[in-house]
Length: 352
Image (cartoon, rainbow, N blue to C red; front, side, top):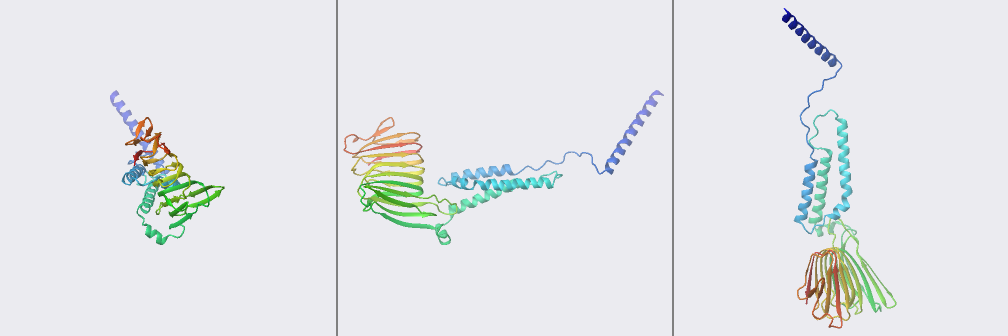
């Protein structure tokens, strides 16, 4: 009897709880509310991470495939584009999230992902035009400001007994040699804005300045092509600043007393062979790349190579620490004292 009474009470409580749940559910349904639902399918992952990996991979692949390709000017010039495009992508993501607050699944690609795709296409276009654009096609379509130009200049000595020359070469191919009947015979080729040439004589001293302008643009060739011939048969001091590219300095026929060469990046071929009227103090500094320096066998030579240099090849020269000397050093009326320091990858000292 007692057991039957307990079972009846338990059944009544179960029925009461069921009715209470049904009434509560009906009440909530009537108000338009819903009970929390179990978590739905997982949200789609963003494509931004894979796109970043692809971008970095393409960047380093281009560097490996084209060692002579200089991508840094492009990045330095167009880095604001990266901020602008990614900022627009972020704005779109914020707008989408505001307009779809109840969307359980994210879109398959976000605005930031689209922004990275646009940036990849943009820089691929820049690379394609800069690498494969044909000079002749651009000559036909570009105006005076952007086309390739060519000019020759001749500078007379004008009575000067000595000359100091300052040359600023931004990038491209540079050739300097002696043998001119004037102070300077110059043949300039450039894109964009051309070099400036200034010469003035004060008393019996001449001051020559040749300065090129950096004309970087990814949509065409940006190299300069200079061929300079010095002469005049007077002592000269030459200071040369080279941005990047290939430089061939055949200075055996120039009466140099002081030479200063500041390298940026690229290749330097410096020829100091030939008879000397006066001793030469020369300094080559900075830069990344290779340098070949040709030295006379019948003139005393001392080379001091120090500071950040990868390797020095000096067959035929005696070495004492950072000093390299030939057999004629200290025995001839004129001599060459050369200092090479700072950042050069490889140096070949060749005695001829």
